[in-house]
Image: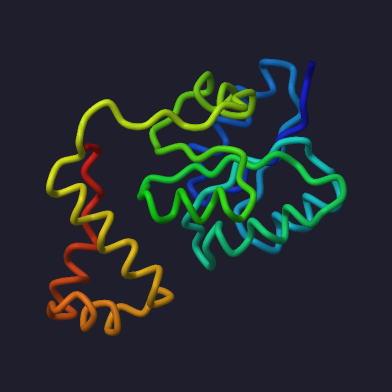
Length: 173
């Protein structure tokens, strides 16, 4: 069965490549780079599947997710991010995401995420100390609604130290 996809991502190179690969597979696919364009495309095209980046230029995918899920008919939504954490994964699933994937993810992995109805398998090994620190910082940042100064105070660290840690890519495991 062929589906219609909406790819919401501000990384144009990645998104355009993904849309082309979906077209080659016979699926209808559109690209939106911002929240307003994404909601307009969702209303106009009524896609059956949405691939949503967690961090868009002007907003968070988590803020856009409930608005997408309220549309009729509600599409399946997979969150895709380069900044994965347990806290954001839990929030995404609570807000109605079908699945949550970390970049880089290939087309086969993305399509499998839409087909998957089983819960995510737990990791095979314990995460590294760096990964646990990243998760803890992300959870605290989420609790303080993205306020870096308040998060730094809550974590007992200097604001600049927290900003340096946030600029780094998360450790895989």
